[in-house]
Image (cartoon, rainbow, N blue to C red; front, side):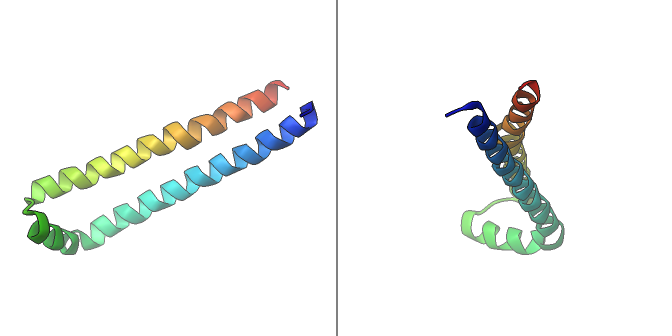
Length: 90
């Protein structure tokens, strides 16, 4: 693989990472809007199934959102930034 092929590959890979990051954040925004509008409905279902208190439900939901955000940053945004830095140095 020559230098030009590597640049093309890194640009495409960077594009994939960026799209993954943007789609993950869109999912986070959707999940947050759903939580704002339908939390009572979701809580009602989960409290019947698992016997959760409202506090437990909120903690679990926010933990999932935080975990998803951290994973999106670690696995998509940081590699995208790294690829951009490598491409600028070439």
